[in-house]
Image 1: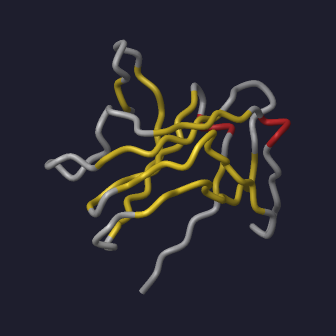
Image 2: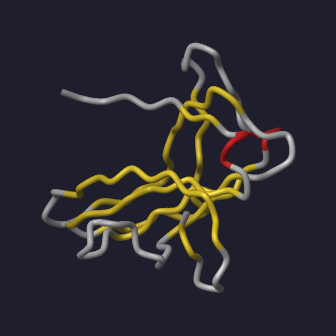
Length: 116
């Protein structure tokens, strides 16, 4: 569980990544693959910096919220759902995470994989 700035606790799933380009990058969208979606609760994708404790910060650099009706689930992980940011998000060289947060992540199931 993560604690928001206003003190609420929410369930969160996060994936860290590194921006190694010296001049940084612009992110316009992130595509994810869902196995199940909630008919009741929305889900929010955030981009956050990684803290010195190797956890996503509570500071949010960008976010997109989707309701279950705008997310496509697939049993085989073959259908992508795109989270499109309102404007390009600049990320300088460093470590970040994108996190999925919702009131009830038990209804949301996202596909994942492990490299290596």
